[in-house]
Length: 95
Image (cartoon, rainbow, N blue to C red; front, side, top):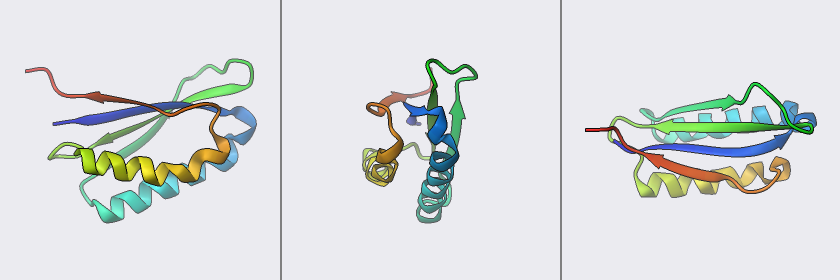
């Protein structure tokens, strides 16, 4: 099973606008992929008025490369709030 961990930075001042956009993106992705698990986490500390956020995606059959591409396409809506690039990490269970 392949899971995605995507982290990026958001200005703390933009968090109130960015969070609903991420939640709407997750809801739209879950409508198209009902078994998709999507979560939004953040680091508890800020640095210089910037927060680090992480989106976590999992699916019972794994997050395919096609779904990963769809997630990244959907995330283009977040570009007004990003402070730098989104970093995608792929993990699989230990066997």
